[in-house]
Amino acid sequence: MKFTQEHEELRRTVRQFVEKEINPHVKEWEAAGRFPIHEVFKKMGDLGLLGVTKPVEYGGMGLDYSYGMVMSEEMGTVHCGGVPLAVGVQTDMATPALARFGSDQLRRDYLAPAIAGDMVASIAVSEPQAGSDVAAVKTTAKKDGDDYVINGTKMWITNSPSADFFCLLANTSDDKPHINKSLIVVPKDAAGITVDKPLDKLGMRSSETAQVFFDNVRVPQRNLIGQEGMGFMMQMMQFQEERLFAASNSLKGMEHVINETIEYARERKVFGMSLLDNQTVHFRLAELQTEVEALRALTYRACDLYINGQDVLQLASMAKLKVGRLAREVADSCLQFWGGNGFMWDNPASQLYRDGRLGSIGGGADEIMLGIICKTMNTLPGKKK
Image (cartoon, rainbow, N blue to C red; front, side, top):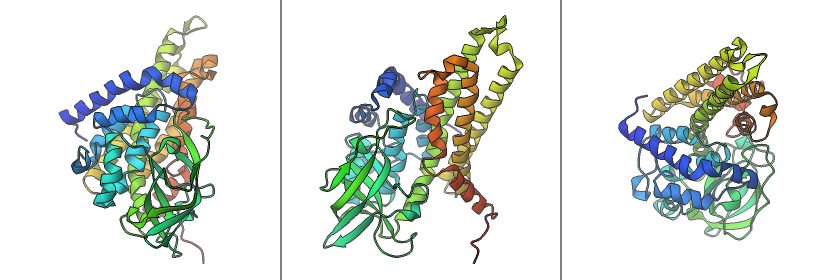
């Protein structure tokens, strides 16, 4: 992966935005359980940060995903996981399929405002009984005249309390699970949509996540993204960018915790010597930084192949698997070195401890990633007859 001056300029722009507009407010937003998403997104839209990889004709920069990865990595300098998660939902989860396969009308009505920061997007896939098992979703969208009539419940939907529209996955036929699903743009103000109160989450506290109910919700059939029955395939494609986002977004957050732990351990005196001078401590921190660098190399390689049109299903799944586990490892090891201070709510290690745990669940659980990797290695047993 070779970064150009344009990559570095984007990196500086994101870092300056984070330092000025986000990090000074993180403690306040975490305590409130929300952040002013429309205000923040509008500022990001004005800088072009919500459309880095999106088509120029709809307000995007039209750059390849290496630029999206740079933005994601720099958003990892935010001192919490909730705000970057909300941004990632907008840029890498709810809009990739819309940008690739949506009609010109849909992209003018929804993608362009999302890129500009005038609309907040949400991805509505998971259900109470269908998280990582996307094929098991039960929400239906049945044709009635020129409309779809949508019924069902979506769970753990990030950005939903403030969303202006959903990219919703629903069953549009009674065919087999992998070919009966479609992606549909559903405006939040459509009659019959109820967003429940925000969920009380372990981490990602500043992002709002809620259950959403669809009761005979009517939307025009022209809100279909791409072709009917291709929703599962398009969602699997979206997952690749989501997983690359998850991996790259966590790198600098883990480094921040490692560096903060180094400084604390250097100043902390235990039994007459610096805590950092204990071989157990400085060796462990060296191991953790090595693991972060290894993940960075894996993520960069996956991105490099992705922008060159190659299949990165295996590598993106490996990166997603690794980041979920490594975030837990970094958080747990560093928290231990902070002692009692590590058990405090506002400690950087405890912040990662809470926020990072989602990495092994959201966007496909570790077990799903392992299954995908095994399938690409041809080691997954076939179904027994």
